[in-house]
Image (cartoon, rainbow, N blue to C red; front, top):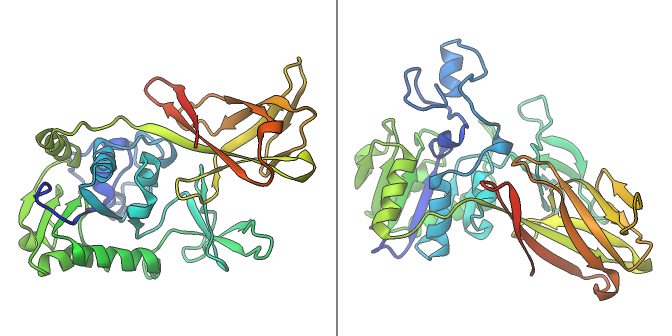
Length: 355
């Protein structure tokens, strides 16, 4: 089906992240999942709100074989679009193209300006509100002409889905000749209506889930199994190797007036990405270091040549990254972007290239 497809779309739910240590919502009390019963099942059974089987927090979770299979299928041109109900941020962290992704229920690391709509990614959970329908994070848009309040992007029950993601999801579901559902109970609407749209147009719907779903009768193929097990076999059949997860970071340097230097970062779609816990510049002499613990990381270097030391949140044990800088070589008021890669399995930075 994948080889024959002209417009292959995938739809993912919490089941693709359980192998990373993040529990789902609906798995029963006797589930075979290592994360244990889903959050709502535990609540219904009054077994406590926390899950003792959870291995990692969302910020430390490593994208699964399923996440990385989808990345490779998109990069090889098979997968045209990905619709996700997940808020864990693992699709974006895996390296999946933001231009081919709809996160219907938001992203725990993403906040948006209420006035201009500008997006901000953070390497930490952005939601701070105590009330369910209060989404203010307490931060402001950095656009000097805007300065609007920033809101987390999480969609709770009874709230409208983001318009663009909703529209994109339905458009691609109508175009799809193959819709692959992975790890979703398909009980939450309007999200579940997207794969249903494909099936009702007479196109192929494939559902991979441990539990029954309301759309099983519409499916061309129904597989009762773990998502990682299925995708491992699918990729082997396609003769496509599943890539290892490599953490990608885009560092940004910008020289301003009066020889100032702004150090920042961005996501692959160029939206601001807060990834530094601290930044310092070192001039090569003992104890001759300037350090800033909070953004914006703006410096006025004392000399042209120095080293920028970048300190991260260390979710994957990322050690400090050092970047040698020549101020004289930087263009004025223009971004210079570097992509660096961190191999989690080796616990080391493995590459740095100027984009």
